[in-house]
Image 1 (spheres, rainbow, N blue to C red):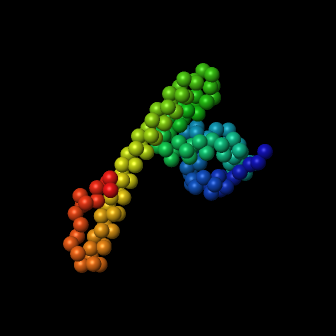
Image 2: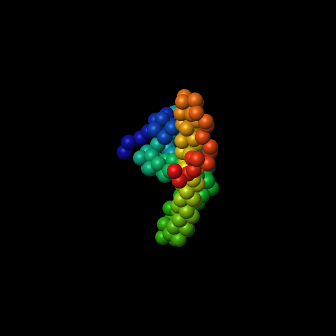
Image 3: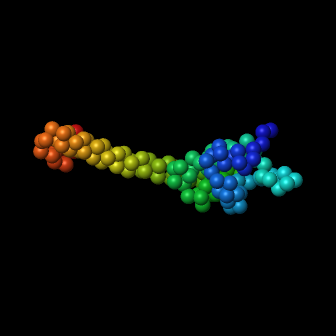
Length: 138
């Protein structure tokens, strides 16, 4: 079984050592063993859990919901409906965030086209374009 230091995990997941200690303190990371010198020892199990934590964090799942999820995972048969509900709600949240980001992206793309039009007008000494000429559909 491969083991990892806090420094290795920090580097691998781009997290500070204090964040890893915090995750341990609140129960997101469990069963962290210690060396005789009191240094933390992480395993592949911790790597797997941190992968899930990173995914959840990147997609906006609150820590309280992460704690719920990992609690549910401790007894999947008893909590299967809770797991499905939590993940389904989070999936819907992510889909809504993607929809909002796609709308915002269209707005940014419109601005890019508009300012390119202004740049062309400046260089060719022409009248500046109108914002409405760069509608999202064009």
